[in-house]
Image 1 (cartoon, rainbow, N blue to C red):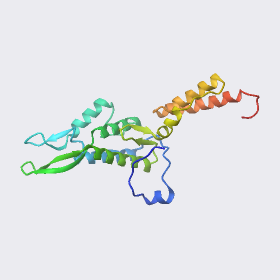
Image 2: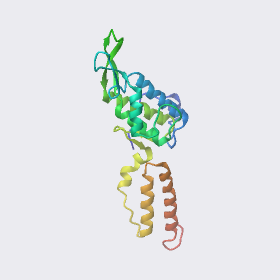
Image 3: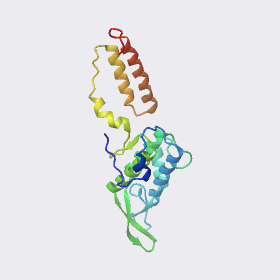
Length: 221
């Protein structure tokens, strides 16, 4: 089972009824708005200023996030990505979260510059990434989304993350080559990151079941 970082407290609904099963595949508008608001809040606090800085007027000290530079760089790596306007598709949003994880760092106010009327910022990348992961994964859990932002910043489909190691060790040896091929096809598609390909795994499983019924002595299996 994948170990998920999370807060020590729980919402009353989770304590009473348990957490929602994380089975949803699509990020809806409400979740998108929550993610966008969170990222913009971090930017306003300077949490992306280590890599995308606005500098002090007196030197190369970071004082804020250059949001425009960050967005332009993100679009260069993730076509169609934007924290403004309509929600991108789910795959694009997940890529955007990985991008943000790569560049986030907890920003704390350091020396106060009287003339510039701002604080110079100090950064902690590890703490920033941990807090970012915790918040995003909590959003995923609370909304029943089948995704996990990992410690490396990659987003995993939860079912794939849970079963990847076990499935990697499976070797199909049924005695029927065609059945082996169908089962292997189902496994490969099931482990794919694209939802539409994972859905095709069901077809392969069904084909394998139909093949299985043609084998043996004809009795129910």
